[in-house]
Image (cartoon, rainbow over all chains, first blue to last red; front, side, top):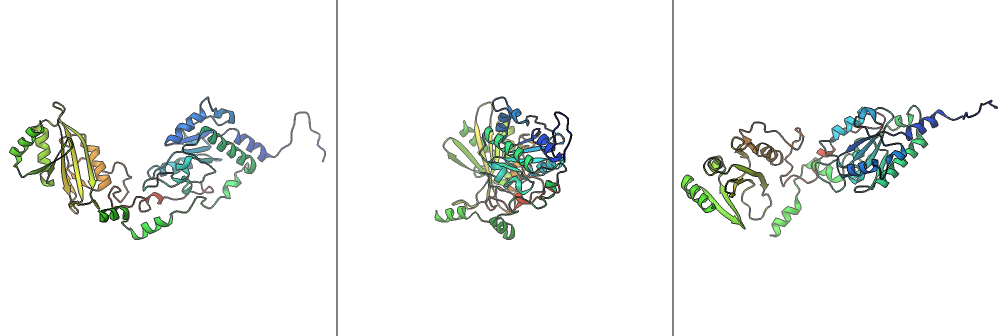
Length: 196
Length: 166
């Protein structure tokens, strides 16, 4: 089909245009609870300059953001707040889980710390590290941009398809045992007392 | 200086009302829980211990040679003379109750709430004895030694939000 196009007119798909626009103007919601938040601040500052990737506009209101960066450990008292903020963000939105604690609980394997935010909210990109260097976070944002450009749609149908929880299961095996039998373990402490 | 204070305590409450012990330069006074409040009131009002530096508790479960379950510890400071005294009282289940010292030192407010939150020891007369660190609906007392380190599933007891419904 021959089209009689004037100068400086390019034909494209609507999805590609919206993906290009969205991926190059991510507005992060900094959910910074620990030392990862300091690295997040360093990423946004002049030395690493997140503005090069169009993601420098940090807003502290979830209504104005479309990228949640969970930077740091999330305790069980904070998780309802995290879920509420995630639900308050307008579509389309994405989530980066930054650092070992947000991804898996990290070294804080205790009763109070959530073992990975992906158990309770959907996560698009995981950034490892303890804390990750700004270069790693920038790589994560670039990966997210590539993901948006590759699979994004104008109407967000790729989000509607994600109907199952994507994180690990609700409990680990030991957790099920502790919940079912309400066992009082502390076997180490008891053995040590018997040895003495 | 502390020997004079201990002598005054013996005169006031009787020689067998407390047991004294020492560790390095710490002087500890072990008191029965029923008498701890009058001891502390006397120490503050008459002997000038005007600052409650720290109030904390210890769980002695599985501890070698321990006879009592919980210990509640008051560390007092006389800001005029610099004297420090540690008052210790032992508690056992099911009588995990102590009179609150909020009326003597206002700083006991949050420390007593923290002890209640972590060990389940109730302080009678406290104006607002609610959990201070854990959520109010939390059911266990996590610093007790028979509570598992990784909890009983409280950290995973939340709804899961999928991407389609958010």
